[in-house]
Length: 303
Image (cartoon, rainbow, N blue to C red; front, top):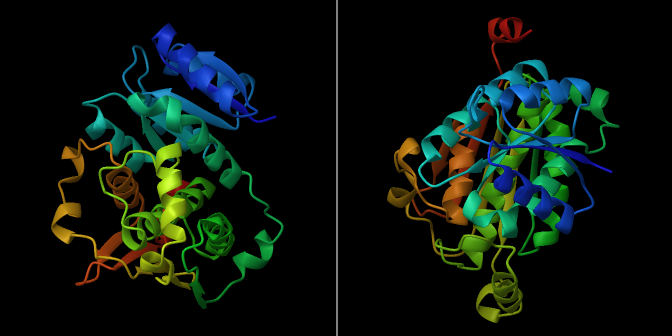
C-alpha cells in the first residue's frame, strides 16, 4: 500500500489532508509538523510521496523541496498552497516539486493528484536499459478525444525520456507531468471548449459536461494530435488540437504573479516551471514544449 507523508504545522490542516487521502484512495498516511521533522521521518522510512505545506517554522516547504531534491531525487513532492503563496509555489516547482494543489480544493483534487504522481513515479522500468540506448525517435499519436489514452501516452514518453540526460529520475517524471498537462489543456480547454475558469476537471459536474461533449457532433470529430521528437540532446513535444486557439496574451503572464486557481492556469504554471522552452503557434492551437539535455559540466555538478 503506498505511503504518503503529510507535512503541515497546522494540526487541523494536517489531519484534514490525511483524511482526504485515506478516504479517497488506498493509502497509508503519516504526519510531520514541519520540514525538519519530515526529514527525520523520511530517513526512518522512505515514503512514496510527500505532501507539504509551504509556510512552516524551522524548515519551510521551499527548503524541504530543495533538501528532498538533493538527497532523495526519486521522491515526488506535492505542495499544498494557500492564497497568496503562488510565488513561493512557483519557486518550489523550479526546485523540483512535482505538482501543487490549492488548499481550497484539497477535498476535490488532492487524492487524485497524489495517486497519479505515485503511479507515474512507480511505473514499470522494464525497458530502462533499452531506452538509455535510444539514438533518436520521431512519432505521432492521433488521440482523437480519448481521455483514457493520455495516461498510457505519458508513461510511454517517460520511458523514452531515459535517453535524455537529465539531472535525475525525478526530472524525467516532471517532464512527463508537463506533457500530460499540455495534452489535457488541448483536450479539455481546446477541443471540448471547457471554460478556462474551471478549477477541477474531475468534479462530477465537469465530468458530466465532458461526457456530453464527447458525444456531441460539434466536438466529437476534432482531433488531438501529439508529435514527439526525442534524442540524447533534447525532447520536443507538439500538442495540437482543433478547437478554438488559446489566447497567447492571456497565457504569457508574469510567472510569479499568477494568482489563478483555474485548471488551465495551474497546468500552464507547471509547464513553464519544468520545460526549457514553450511556445504557442500563431493560431493558438499548438503547444510546443522543449526539454534539453544537461551539459556534461552540469551533470558532473549534479553528481
